[in-house]
Length: 240
Length: 356
Image (cartoon, rainbow over all chains, first blue to last red; front, top):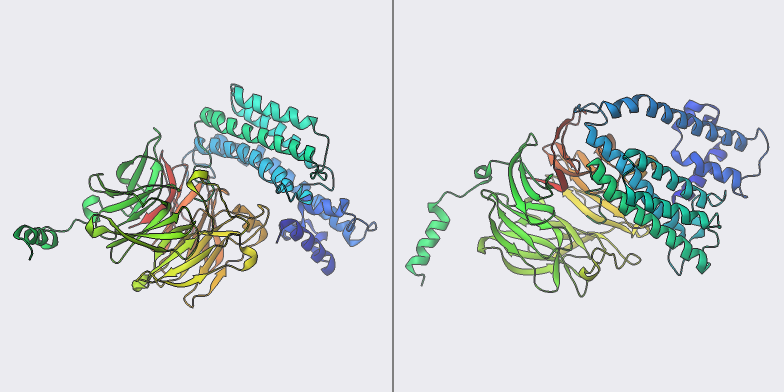
């Protein structure tokens, strides 16, 4: 089953059973990931079939529970980054109990994060709604209900560009140039939620953006990989 | 009538000289291809502690290897679509034979010895029709090609031998490719993957398929326990957001089933299983996802351990536990109690590791 339907199914299930775990943040943590996060939240705020509910109704508390859960996760992530993770990254050495065994594993983790971020844009954020030429899938665009499809791509590109530059000594000329070109082009697009993807002009624009991001991926995987002295995805080629 | 010379040669070949064994090649316990820091590719013989017993240069990137069950000979396969495989003498690194399939056929990256090492089977593609083939090579006559049979599907990848001479199981990935288009998939809308059972006389006995709605689940890797249970891993070719099951079993009653996971567990495999191994006693299964950077260990079909490591891919059963290898150079001797032993090397381990 498609993951987006799974989100809907889980929300419906929570509502139908009036699951009381939404009233307790610790219990709500145990609820399947399908019932929370931004995708579930978007349904309950922007989907006309699911966003009419009264204050203090079950759905209203469900929205609060999801928001609260996202907040807690964000805080935990932030604490981990600045606390334990930061220490582990800087002190990485051969130690079987640790997340990273040495500095090159840390570098590889950073490189992989940047590259998978770019892959995600091409494969999911653009590739899914693009579908095929004779069968576009606008409803597969990420966050189309809240008109964030394009915005999420732009934010992601800017963040990944910043991480890549900070990971290096700013010497990744090709990478910087390719990121800048992709970001510049994305800023010229006006369709925010990709719902007119059937129009040849929008389709062409999104394909161009996809190409620019792929080119950025290639430049980053060469330059940043060389700079950090590590490789990413040696074993992840399709079909091996 | 046999000439005197032939007669003598026969005597020498059959009895006078002691047969060479893997002990003569340093007694490796595992074989795996890897890339060295200098960019060169090698086939490594590895001992139980993860150290190299031998390193043999390869002309290009390897994918998987097959080891002769008794003689110190291994076949190194190029990545698909490959036009050659090398039979290597693991005592001195010399090439015994370069295997080249007939025109219009190419290799698909895996192989398997059967009949006590007498016959090598290779997974292959007939280019013009896309028919999956198994190439048969006679190891006792200098790896002469003795024919080919249907693999029972399209895009055969990994092949493993069943116990007690019951033949082999073949993972037919279902995806058609053509060397002119590199690794491009030509039939994703109509693909159908299966596992075929081929008997010891190379006839198709049975085909195991997944439910129809999973038709884009490409079964690419499998492993077989001592009793004959088959574990398999898939690569999902459908919508990347679909959380579909990627690991399954064919039990001794020959029923095919899939292991159920929670949504989060399913998603962390990123739709891609790189290798799979089942313990000899059938109790545990090891599954790697290099894309997710994670390995799952299932005991009695329940997820009991996760190993998060970048580019983790190779896995092989090591008695009742497992060994895992990573593109980052890590060799992990897994213990089911969680006390894993990790050995770091400066090479990149390739997709697969096999046991001797």
